[in-house]
Length: 97
Image (cartoon, rainbow, N blue to C red; front, side, top):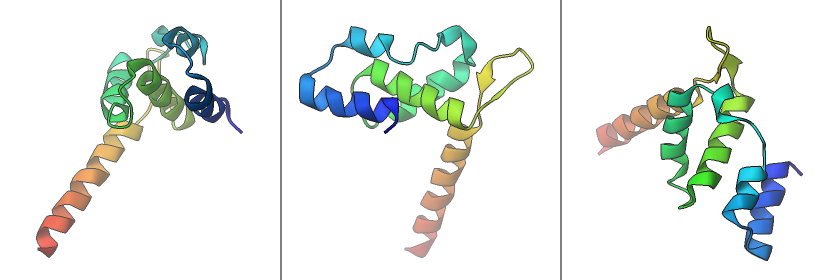
């Protein structure tokens, strides 16, 4: 079981604190493309009200699908591609009506 899933399940069982979340996945924010993290947090806040949880989920997605950009920051097309896919599906559903 991956660390995030364990932490997420623990949150329901033991009521972990925000400081626990900050210590999980010690990836320094400065390693990531700031815009991509901000976009990811906005998307992940659809699933949680905790900004630290949203940030960690975003970082996990960015790392899974990411690469280093020219500045050496970890970045990803994950959220831009997700947005394109959602818009395409909305258009298709609208056209079916």
